[in-house]
Length: 400
Ligand code: F0G
Image 1: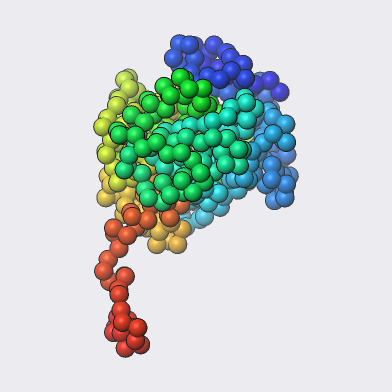
Image 2: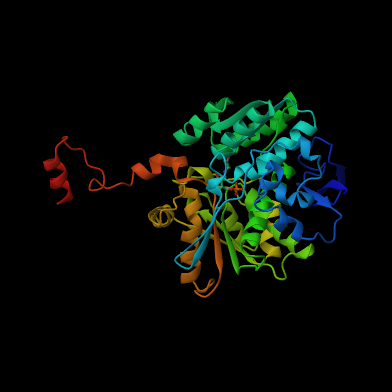
Protein backbone atom coordinates (compact mmCIF):
# COMPACT_ATOMS: atom_id res chain seq x y z
CA UNK A 1 0.00 0.00 0.00
CA UNK A 2 1.49 3.31 -1.00
CA UNK A 3 1.95 5.94 1.69
CA UNK A 4 3.22 9.46 1.35
CA UNK A 5 3.61 12.66 3.31
CA UNK A 6 1.34 15.38 2.04
CA UNK A 7 1.28 19.07 2.96
CA UNK A 8 -2.11 20.07 4.38
CA UNK A 9 -1.66 23.59 2.98
CA UNK A 10 -0.27 23.22 -0.58
CA UNK A 11 -0.72 19.43 -1.12
CA UNK A 12 2.94 18.95 -2.06
CA UNK A 13 4.00 15.35 -1.53
CA UNK A 14 7.12 13.83 0.00
CA UNK A 15 8.39 10.30 0.43
CA UNK A 16 7.71 8.75 3.86
CA UNK A 17 11.45 8.09 4.10
CA UNK A 18 12.12 11.83 4.17
CA UNK A 19 13.09 13.16 7.59
CA UNK A 20 10.90 16.22 7.71
CA UNK A 21 8.02 17.50 9.85
CA UNK A 22 6.79 20.42 7.74
CA UNK A 23 6.55 21.28 4.06
CA UNK A 24 8.93 23.72 2.38
CA UNK A 25 5.97 26.13 2.41
CA UNK A 26 5.81 25.80 6.21
CA UNK A 27 2.59 23.76 6.22
CA UNK A 28 2.06 20.72 8.43
CA UNK A 29 2.40 17.26 6.91
CA UNK A 30 -0.07 14.41 6.94
CA UNK A 31 0.44 10.72 6.17
CA UNK A 32 -1.91 9.83 3.31
CA UNK A 33 -2.68 6.56 1.57
CA UNK A 34 -4.74 5.66 -1.48
CA UNK A 35 -6.98 3.01 0.08
CA UNK A 36 -10.68 3.61 -0.58
CA UNK A 37 -12.15 0.78 1.43
CA UNK A 38 -10.67 -1.36 4.20
CA UNK A 39 -12.79 -4.16 5.63
CA UNK A 40 -13.13 -3.49 9.36
CA UNK A 41 -13.85 -7.15 10.10
CA UNK A 42 -10.08 -7.84 10.12
CA UNK A 43 -9.82 -5.53 13.15
CA UNK A 44 -12.63 -7.31 14.94
CA UNK A 45 -10.98 -10.68 14.27
CA UNK A 46 -7.73 -9.45 15.90
CA UNK A 47 -9.41 -8.35 19.14
CA UNK A 48 -8.38 -10.54 22.02
CA UNK A 49 -5.40 -11.89 20.07
CA UNK A 50 -2.23 -12.76 21.98
CA UNK A 51 0.54 -11.73 19.60
CA UNK A 52 1.75 -8.23 20.58
CA UNK A 53 1.00 -6.57 17.22
CA UNK A 54 -2.57 -7.84 17.21
CA UNK A 55 -3.07 -7.26 20.95
CA UNK A 56 -1.96 -3.64 20.46
CA UNK A 57 -4.91 -1.27 20.14
CA UNK A 58 -2.79 0.64 17.63
CA UNK A 59 -1.37 -2.08 15.40
CA UNK A 60 -4.66 -3.96 15.31
CA UNK A 61 -5.56 -1.22 12.81
CA UNK A 62 -2.18 -1.32 11.05
CA UNK A 63 -3.50 -1.27 7.48
CA UNK A 64 -4.63 2.31 8.18
CA UNK A 65 -1.76 3.31 10.52
CA UNK A 66 1.57 2.49 8.89
CA UNK A 67 2.67 0.09 6.21
CA UNK A 68 5.56 -1.73 7.89
CA UNK A 69 6.93 -5.24 8.33
CA UNK A 70 5.40 -6.48 11.60
CA UNK A 71 8.87 -7.55 12.76
CA UNK A 72 9.98 -3.91 12.69
CA UNK A 73 7.21 -2.65 14.99
CA UNK A 74 8.22 -1.23 18.39
CA UNK A 75 5.19 -2.04 20.54
CA UNK A 76 4.72 -2.51 24.30
CA UNK A 77 1.83 -3.35 23.29
CA UNK A 78 -0.36 -0.32 23.98
CA UNK A 79 -4.01 0.71 23.64
CA UNK A 80 -6.81 -1.77 24.29
CA UNK A 81 -8.00 0.56 27.02
CA UNK A 82 -11.35 0.32 28.80
CA UNK A 83 -14.54 2.15 27.96
CA UNK A 84 -16.51 2.89 31.14
CA UNK A 85 -20.18 3.77 31.27
CA UNK A 86 -21.05 5.94 34.29
CA UNK A 87 -23.88 8.38 34.94
CA UNK A 88 -25.08 8.21 31.35
CA UNK A 89 -21.68 9.11 29.90
CA UNK A 90 -18.95 6.99 28.36
CA UNK A 91 -15.31 7.40 29.39
CA UNK A 92 -12.50 5.98 27.22
CA UNK A 93 -9.60 5.79 29.67
CA UNK A 94 -6.36 6.39 27.81
CA UNK A 95 -4.60 6.66 31.17
CA UNK A 96 -4.64 2.85 31.06
CA UNK A 97 -1.86 2.81 28.48
CA UNK A 98 1.53 1.36 29.51
CA UNK A 99 3.01 4.70 30.61
CA UNK A 100 -0.26 6.09 31.90
CA UNK A 101 -1.30 8.38 29.05
CA UNK A 102 -2.61 8.33 25.47
CA UNK A 103 0.83 9.35 24.22
CA UNK A 104 1.87 5.71 23.89
CA UNK A 105 -0.45 5.31 20.91
CA UNK A 106 1.40 7.93 18.92
CA UNK A 107 4.79 6.99 20.31
CA UNK A 108 4.72 3.36 19.16
CA UNK A 109 4.27 4.58 15.57
CA UNK A 110 6.78 7.43 15.77
CA UNK A 111 9.36 5.12 17.35
CA UNK A 112 8.77 2.43 14.73
CA UNK A 113 9.31 5.11 12.08
CA UNK A 114 12.43 6.38 13.89
CA UNK A 115 13.95 2.89 13.71
CA UNK A 116 12.99 2.58 10.04
CA UNK A 117 14.74 5.86 9.28
CA UNK A 118 17.85 4.72 11.12
CA UNK A 119 17.64 7.37 13.85
CA UNK A 120 19.94 6.94 16.83
CA UNK A 121 18.46 9.64 19.07
CA UNK A 122 14.92 10.94 19.59
CA UNK A 123 13.67 14.10 21.28
CA UNK A 124 10.54 15.98 22.25
CA UNK A 125 9.38 19.00 24.21
CA UNK A 126 6.87 18.00 26.82
CA UNK A 127 4.62 18.90 29.71
CA UNK A 128 5.49 15.45 31.06
CA UNK A 129 3.44 12.73 29.40
CA UNK A 130 5.09 12.73 25.99
CA UNK A 131 8.47 12.68 27.71
CA UNK A 132 7.57 9.65 29.83
CA UNK A 133 6.23 7.84 26.78
CA UNK A 134 9.23 8.75 24.64
CA UNK A 135 11.60 7.57 27.38
CA UNK A 136 9.84 4.20 27.68
CA UNK A 137 9.71 3.51 23.95
CA UNK A 138 13.25 4.73 23.34
CA UNK A 139 14.42 2.34 26.07
CA UNK A 140 12.66 -0.50 24.27
CA UNK A 141 14.00 0.53 20.87
CA UNK A 142 17.54 1.12 22.13
CA UNK A 143 17.62 4.79 21.09
CA UNK A 144 19.05 7.75 22.97
CA UNK A 145 16.23 9.79 24.53
CA UNK A 146 16.47 13.55 25.10
CA UNK A 147 13.50 15.47 26.49
CA UNK A 148 12.99 19.21 26.84
CA UNK A 149 10.68 20.22 29.68
CA UNK A 150 9.69 23.62 31.06
CA UNK A 151 11.83 23.85 34.19
CA UNK A 152 9.82 23.32 37.38
CA UNK A 153 6.54 23.15 35.46
CA UNK A 154 5.87 19.43 35.10
CA UNK A 155 4.48 17.12 37.77
CA UNK A 156 6.93 15.27 40.00
CA UNK A 157 5.51 11.90 38.95
CA UNK A 158 5.98 12.55 35.24
CA UNK A 159 9.52 13.81 35.78
CA UNK A 160 10.41 10.78 37.91
CA UNK A 161 8.88 8.41 35.36
CA UNK A 162 10.85 10.00 32.51
CA UNK A 163 14.09 9.72 34.50
CA UNK A 164 13.32 6.15 35.56
CA UNK A 165 13.09 4.97 31.95
CA UNK A 166 16.52 6.50 31.37
CA UNK A 167 15.99 9.67 29.34
CA UNK A 168 18.25 12.72 29.51
CA UNK A 169 16.09 15.57 30.82
CA UNK A 170 16.87 19.13 29.74
CA UNK A 171 15.00 21.52 32.02
CA UNK A 172 14.54 24.59 29.86
CA UNK A 173 14.30 28.00 31.52
CA UNK A 174 11.02 29.00 29.93
CA UNK A 175 7.53 27.61 29.34
CA UNK A 176 6.43 24.70 27.13
CA UNK A 177 6.21 26.90 24.04
CA UNK A 178 9.83 27.99 24.52
CA UNK A 179 10.91 24.36 24.96
CA UNK A 180 8.99 23.44 21.78
CA UNK A 181 10.77 26.09 19.72
CA UNK A 182 14.12 24.98 21.12
CA UNK A 183 13.64 21.27 20.45
CA UNK A 184 12.68 21.95 16.84
CA UNK A 185 15.86 23.96 16.30
CA UNK A 186 18.00 21.43 18.19
CA UNK A 187 16.65 18.51 16.14
CA UNK A 188 17.29 20.37 12.87
CA UNK A 189 20.86 21.22 13.85
CA UNK A 190 21.89 18.07 15.67
CA UNK A 191 20.31 15.34 13.55
CA UNK A 192 17.95 14.10 16.27
CA UNK A 193 14.56 12.68 15.28
CA UNK A 194 11.69 14.79 16.63
CA UNK A 195 8.69 12.87 17.98
CA UNK A 196 6.37 15.64 19.15
CA UNK A 197 2.90 15.52 17.61
CA UNK A 198 4.11 17.84 14.85
CA UNK A 199 5.56 14.54 13.61
CA UNK A 200 2.78 13.18 11.36
CA UNK A 201 3.45 9.57 12.39
CA UNK A 202 2.37 10.42 15.96
CA UNK A 203 -0.99 11.47 14.57
CA UNK A 204 -1.36 8.13 12.75
CA UNK A 205 -1.10 6.28 16.06
CA UNK A 206 -3.40 8.60 17.98
CA UNK A 207 -6.18 8.08 15.43
CA UNK A 208 -6.66 4.65 16.97
CA UNK A 209 -8.13 6.15 20.16
CA UNK A 210 -11.18 6.99 18.08
CA UNK A 211 -11.18 3.77 16.07
CA UNK A 212 -10.92 1.65 19.18
CA UNK A 213 -13.77 3.47 20.89
CA UNK A 214 -15.89 3.06 17.75
CA UNK A 215 -15.04 -0.62 17.82
CA UNK A 216 -15.94 -0.74 21.55
CA UNK A 217 -19.35 0.61 20.50
CA UNK A 218 -19.65 -2.02 17.76
CA UNK A 219 -19.14 0.70 15.15
CA UNK A 220 -22.25 2.61 16.18
CA UNK A 221 -21.02 6.20 16.08
CA UNK A 222 -21.75 8.23 19.23
CA UNK A 223 -23.11 11.78 18.95
CA UNK A 224 -20.06 13.45 20.47
CA UNK A 225 -16.41 12.73 21.21
CA UNK A 226 -14.94 15.07 23.81
CA UNK A 227 -11.19 15.63 24.13
CA UNK A 228 -8.87 17.94 26.09
CA UNK A 229 -6.95 20.33 23.84
CA UNK A 230 -3.40 21.57 24.39
CA UNK A 231 -0.90 21.23 21.59
CA UNK A 232 -3.83 20.02 19.41
CA UNK A 233 -2.30 16.71 18.32
CA UNK A 234 -5.27 14.73 19.55
CA UNK A 235 -7.90 17.06 18.12
CA UNK A 236 -6.11 16.73 14.76
CA UNK A 237 -5.81 12.96 15.03
CA UNK A 238 -9.46 12.56 16.02
CA UNK A 239 -10.67 14.56 13.02
CA UNK A 240 -8.48 12.52 10.65
CA UNK A 241 -9.63 9.28 12.27
CA UNK A 242 -13.29 10.16 11.82
CA UNK A 243 -12.94 11.21 8.20
CA UNK A 244 -11.00 8.06 7.37
CA UNK A 245 -13.47 5.84 9.26
CA UNK A 246 -16.22 7.31 7.11
CA UNK A 247 -14.19 7.03 3.90
CA UNK A 248 -13.23 3.41 4.57
CA UNK A 249 -16.86 2.54 5.29
CA UNK A 250 -16.56 1.76 9.03
CA UNK A 251 -19.22 4.24 10.21
CA UNK A 252 -22.14 5.81 8.41
CA UNK A 253 -22.14 9.16 10.18
CA UNK A 254 -19.49 11.37 11.75
CA UNK A 255 -19.74 12.21 15.46
CA UNK A 256 -19.14 15.84 16.44
CA UNK A 257 -15.86 16.70 18.12
CA UNK A 258 -15.75 18.87 21.23
CA UNK A 259 -12.24 20.11 22.11
CA UNK A 260 -11.95 21.56 25.59
CA UNK A 261 -9.30 24.00 26.75
CA UNK A 262 -8.45 25.46 30.13
CA UNK A 263 -9.44 29.11 30.29
CA UNK A 264 -5.88 30.19 31.07
CA UNK A 265 -4.51 28.33 28.04
CA UNK A 266 -7.25 28.94 25.49
CA UNK A 267 -5.83 30.14 22.14
CA UNK A 268 -7.82 27.54 20.19
CA UNK A 269 -11.04 28.52 21.95
CA UNK A 270 -10.37 32.14 21.03
CA UNK A 271 -9.82 31.03 17.45
CA UNK A 272 -13.11 29.14 17.40
CA UNK A 273 -14.93 32.21 18.73
CA UNK A 274 -13.73 34.13 15.67
CA UNK A 275 -14.43 31.26 13.21
CA UNK A 276 -10.67 30.75 13.05
CA UNK A 277 -10.16 34.03 11.22
CA UNK A 278 -6.81 34.35 12.96
CA UNK A 279 -4.32 32.33 14.96
CA UNK A 280 -4.09 33.23 18.64
CA UNK A 281 -1.19 32.83 21.04
CA UNK A 282 -1.39 33.31 24.81
CA UNK A 283 0.87 33.21 27.86
CA UNK A 284 -0.54 30.00 29.31
CA UNK A 285 -1.40 29.41 32.97
CA UNK A 286 -3.60 26.64 34.39
CA UNK A 287 -3.58 24.07 37.18
CA UNK A 288 -3.77 21.42 34.42
CA UNK A 289 -0.04 21.45 33.67
CA UNK A 290 -0.38 18.93 30.82
CA UNK A 291 -2.22 21.51 28.73
CA UNK A 292 -0.38 24.65 29.86
CA UNK A 293 0.34 25.50 26.23
CA UNK A 294 -0.10 28.91 24.61
CA UNK A 295 0.99 28.36 21.00
CA UNK A 296 -0.20 24.91 19.83
CA UNK A 297 1.76 23.52 16.88
CA UNK A 298 -1.01 21.48 15.25
CA UNK A 299 -3.31 24.50 14.91
CA UNK A 300 -4.05 24.18 11.18
CA UNK A 301 -4.93 20.50 11.18
CA UNK A 302 -7.03 20.94 14.33
CA UNK A 303 -9.02 23.69 12.60
CA UNK A 304 -9.69 21.21 9.78
CA UNK A 305 -10.80 18.62 12.35
CA UNK A 306 -13.29 20.97 14.02
CA UNK A 307 -14.70 22.16 10.71
CA UNK A 308 -14.98 18.68 9.16
CA UNK A 309 -16.83 17.25 12.17
CA UNK A 310 -19.12 20.24 12.77
CA UNK A 311 -17.22 20.40 16.03
CA UNK A 312 -17.03 22.94 18.82
CA UNK A 313 -14.32 24.30 21.10
CA UNK A 314 -15.15 25.16 24.72
CA UNK A 315 -13.13 26.51 27.63
CA UNK A 316 -13.43 25.69 31.34
CA UNK A 317 -12.00 27.35 34.42
CA UNK A 318 -9.54 25.64 36.75
CA UNK A 319 -12.36 25.42 39.34
CA UNK A 320 -14.65 23.74 36.83
CA UNK A 321 -12.06 21.22 35.71
CA UNK A 322 -11.01 20.39 39.27
CA UNK A 323 -14.67 19.90 40.26
CA UNK A 324 -15.06 17.54 37.29
CA UNK A 325 -11.87 15.72 38.28
CA UNK A 326 -13.31 15.15 41.72
CA UNK A 327 -16.43 13.61 40.17
CA UNK A 328 -14.36 11.32 37.93
CA UNK A 329 -12.08 10.38 40.82
CA UNK A 330 -15.04 9.64 43.09
CA UNK A 331 -16.51 7.34 40.44
CA UNK A 332 -13.48 5.18 41.19
CA UNK A 333 -12.09 5.87 37.74
CA UNK A 334 -9.71 8.78 38.34
CA UNK A 335 -7.73 10.93 35.94
CA UNK A 336 -5.24 13.78 35.89
CA UNK A 337 -6.53 17.38 35.83
CA UNK A 338 -6.22 17.96 32.05
CA UNK A 339 -8.40 14.91 31.34
CA UNK A 340 -11.21 16.30 33.50
CA UNK A 341 -11.71 19.23 31.12
CA UNK A 342 -13.86 16.72 29.19
CA UNK A 343 -16.54 16.29 31.86
CA UNK A 344 -16.33 19.99 32.77
CA UNK A 345 -16.83 20.78 29.08
CA UNK A 346 -19.83 18.46 28.79
CA UNK A 347 -21.42 20.15 31.80
CA UNK A 348 -20.94 23.54 30.20
CA UNK A 349 -22.06 22.51 26.71
CA UNK A 350 -25.18 20.88 28.15
CA UNK A 351 -25.96 23.99 30.17
CA UNK A 352 -25.67 26.15 27.06
CA UNK A 353 -27.88 23.78 25.03
CA UNK A 354 -25.16 22.67 22.59
CA UNK A 355 -25.25 19.10 23.95
CA UNK A 356 -28.43 17.31 24.98
CA UNK A 357 -29.20 14.84 27.76
CA UNK A 358 -30.25 12.04 25.40
CA UNK A 359 -27.08 12.22 23.29
CA UNK A 360 -24.39 9.56 23.40
CA UNK A 361 -21.20 11.24 24.55
CA UNK A 362 -17.72 9.74 24.87
CA UNK A 363 -15.20 11.61 27.03
CA UNK A 364 -11.58 10.68 26.38
CA UNK A 365 -9.59 10.62 29.63
CA UNK A 366 -6.04 11.25 28.54
CA UNK A 367 -3.97 10.59 31.68
CA UNK A 368 -3.93 8.44 34.83
CA UNK A 369 -4.84 9.78 38.28
CA UNK A 370 -1.31 9.01 39.58
CA UNK A 371 0.27 11.30 36.97
CA UNK A 372 -0.36 14.30 39.20
CA UNK A 373 -0.66 13.38 42.86
CA UNK A 374 -0.03 16.99 43.97
CA UNK A 375 -3.32 17.95 42.34
CA UNK A 376 -5.03 15.36 44.53
CA UNK A 377 -3.23 16.09 47.80
CA UNK A 378 -3.74 19.84 47.56
CA UNK A 379 -7.49 19.30 47.52
CA UNK A 380 -7.89 16.69 50.26
CA UNK A 381 -9.81 17.83 53.35
CA UNK A 382 -8.38 17.36 56.85
CA UNK A 383 -11.37 15.13 57.58
CA UNK A 384 -10.26 12.57 55.02
CA UNK A 385 -6.63 12.15 56.10
CA UNK A 386 -6.02 12.03 59.84
CA UNK A 387 -2.87 11.15 61.78
CA UNK A 388 -3.56 9.02 64.85
CA UNK A 389 -1.91 7.24 67.77
CA UNK A 390 -1.79 3.45 67.28
CA UNK A 391 -4.79 2.67 69.52
CA UNK A 392 -8.30 1.36 68.84
CA UNK A 393 -9.60 4.24 70.94
CA UNK A 394 -8.02 6.71 68.51
CA UNK A 395 -9.65 4.91 65.56
CA UNK A 396 -13.04 4.93 67.35
CA UNK A 397 -12.65 8.65 67.98
CA UNK A 398 -12.01 9.45 64.33
CA UNK A 399 -14.85 7.22 63.06
CA UNK A 400 -17.16 9.10 65.45
N1 F0G B 1 -4.16 15.48 28.23
C1 F0G B 1 -2.97 15.10 28.71
C2 F0G B 1 -2.93 14.25 29.92
C3 F0G B 1 -1.78 15.53 28.05
O1 F0G B 1 -0.60 15.14 28.53
C4 F0G B 1 -1.89 16.35 26.92
C5 F0G B 1 -0.70 16.82 26.22
C6 F0G B 1 -3.17 16.70 26.48
C7 F0G B 1 -4.28 16.26 27.15
C8 F0G B 1 -3.37 17.58 25.29
O2 F0G B 1 -3.24 16.84 24.11
O3 F0G B 1 -1.50 18.24 23.05
O4 F0G B 1 -2.74 16.54 21.75
O5 F0G B 1 -3.86 18.64 22.49
N2 F0G B 1 0.48 16.65 26.65
C9 F0G B 1 1.69 16.96 25.91
C10 F0G B 1 2.89 16.40 26.64
C11 F0G B 1 1.82 18.35 25.51
O6 F0G B 1 4.00 16.91 26.44
O7 F0G B 1 2.76 15.44 27.38
P1 F0G B 1 -2.80 17.61 22.76
